[in-house]
Image 1 (spheres, rainbow, N blue to C red):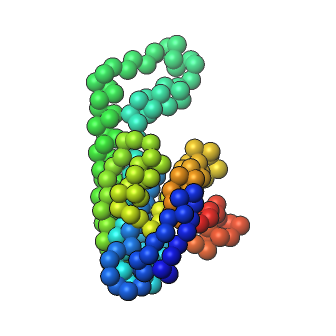
Image 2: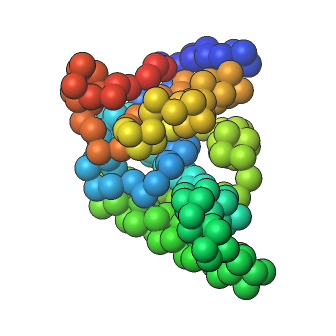
Image 3: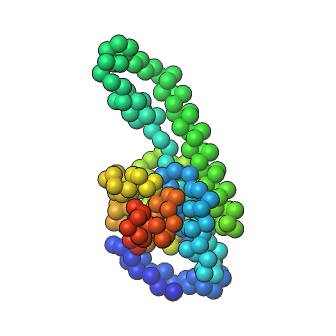
Length: 198
């Protein structure tokens, strides 16, 4: 395939992907760590491409203050009156540190899972809007496509599905939405949550 047109930008790509020269870059926005089975499925999508396929993984950093708000919101009214929650700067810093460590580990495990398939992979933890980071990275590496990988149980929630729809409007490359821990057959059947468009 020598020319591809997609999205508002109608990006024209003149470099063929089947000549074994150059690279075919794919940016993956993963809500969580990429499992070995998900890595194998993703790599399987690109096995026929002769150019070197390079995956650029983005793992969002969980917002420490959002974690505190969620924890406080889950406390019952009786618990709040009996023992009011006290949140100090130290608690917030500790939570941020834990979030950073968790995200770094998820990224390292994701890269290891992709590399175990024989793929070339790099990545980073992001603390900005995920779709903005996806857009910037896609432009920076001149990616040919983007993949949004989310948890199946969250697909129905507007925010996470919105990553894919926002990315499709913003990026000039095909965007594939995949679900963690579901095979392509499960995603395409009525039994799974489903895969969403290119």
